[in-house]
Length: 351
Image (cartoon, rainbow, N blue to C red):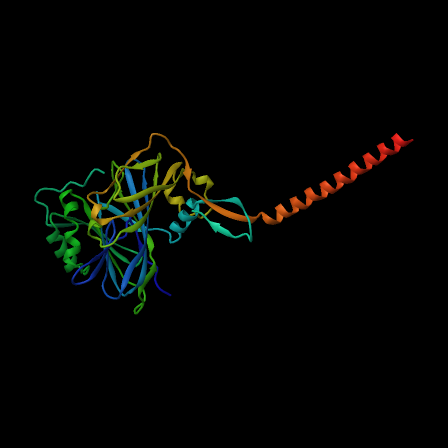
């Protein structure tokens, strides 16, 4: 049985190629397989913000397999990392899935059915090139929370401590170094020798202080292909995304109450009070990425849910035939009644 990894942070899938290893650029970070042929096939993210602290949870679906991998993720302030439930995103998908409604279409012929359509962490003068803010073991992960004064120093620390990331990867972190962000580096290994990483990767939750809701995206500019991002945002109110790097739409918007969630729900740890869920579906075009996603509260907490209209075609020819037969029968009956009336009148006249 393959290990289901737990990686956490908000996401937008992207593919980037580097000389020494293949890196997969997500909006929030970089996934680096050490060996083996893999591709990131699915990106889903949950962001929770209460006005002071932000949680970012990400789940990657990996196609293929690798014996070892590492991830680096930029965040605005020193972070705490813990495991999240594997079925969190399956639950979110079920909760926010479109409603299905049927629309009857009457047609001639055989009927067929179709479907329609933060305050940044401050760098201290004289600080070492890389500061290890924390390092911990979280399940099968070696997790380091780092601050760096430049990407060369960050690269050096990663190499010395077994994270072995390509220089092209850490170069992507330069804008975050300049903004005094910190970095969560995660080294992942299967828990049984000889097993490989692959399949759905169970999430990690990364939590940090932030006075604004933000979703890291700048690393996505280095991806080769456009990708689809499913982003769930929990906040005090409905949120609007102030920028988009391609197509973006709201697929769901509604209140979430802990009392309405089933017992044992994977979402319960994130719903400590009544909060509003806004779901975005984005197709991110790398050439358009020039900053991170920024958000603002919407003017109203308008509820919304996508609807799929299922067109059901019904054969009207049979009904029409019955109607015609009915009309003929009524005509025959009418003629018969008329004949009787005329016959009676003639008898009365003769008499």
